[in-house]
Image (cartoon, rainbow over all chains, first blue to last red):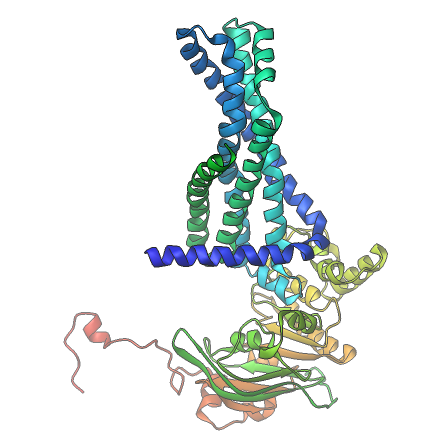
Length: 247
Length: 276
């Protein structure tokens, strides 16, 4: 059991090296990378925006209640924005990204494997690592931070809706406290770095699972499940490690 | 009978001492064969005998346990990935299940190898693709998606894609499965015509001896991990070996067992075993 898990980790590491080696060649298929950014990024916008809005609204409501106990509701904008920029934005976006884009990438590549499309590319002297794997990996790294920014923006908007529009917190207090206490480099950019790392990890797991899945319907089903499970675990574990280093 | 090629030349593919085992089962046990340049050679044999595996060896998709596979003088198992890709640019491969790229239209599927390897003007790409589609009778289906094609149509599109770069060698893996009699006859003629007009070499894996014998120049019958018989279709049809008699006669009894190994049938049904 442990041996199998370690073998999987080792195989995934070798797969990462193969993807990195294929990236220069994949630049020849730049249009494919753009298409994948649209597919995993733009196509994920609805779920990211919706979830960001509701997460922000819940945060606004909960924190307003807690802060009001101590008479500190003026800090609502600060607390919401720091929570989103530093943790919730990158992590929740990564989990949603794994569920929405990661699974579809795994299923797509798994079906390409099952229907010999990857073998056909090999036979046409087109390297599937450069044409299929690397563009999806790059797309994950590019799309994730953009999606996290959208998630954060909608989250803050949701908290503003609840705190200011609904519960009557002063609009100027909400924004001025937020802008004065959020540091672009320490909070926003660190969150972006996290998002890039999470995007790379989720995309790697999704592509690896699809590429190595047994060419059967059951194999593809298990692979998509593994993508979500492994991505979630690795994202949360990596979040702890990165937070410890970036604090 | 479709006229067969009279051209002769040295072997384009030479296989020597090929040994392969998959999952503990011996597939090839020291096979030697030559694929003559400019000819159509059929690889035939019972199901599971390794015909597709042989094609995968020739194209470097699968490495053998031992032996040499020379294609145009190059020993395939020893080639680097880049050298293998250089070789594959000169090889067309028709997959059993067509293996069309499902995100692309018929036109884009056939244009794919051209776009990936050659910087051709769009007008020329269009003309080449339409020419190949016309050859397989599907010019009118250029804008369809693979999901809109029948199995036979998909096979013909895959054939057009395999020949789009005028390769020196084409490997057909079960090209006649799912074709209606009209399409089958057309594909047979196409295989012969392509071979003769373009001067290419073809390897055909198929079970339909009656159809195949109309176009091929040479047949290898593989069974039991060995070359069981070889020769022209006429020679094999007259063959007296138990392998050829069973395979081409379609008989259940012979050296190739019809039944997968199993325990006694009566015992399996719960009856006492019959006395010998």
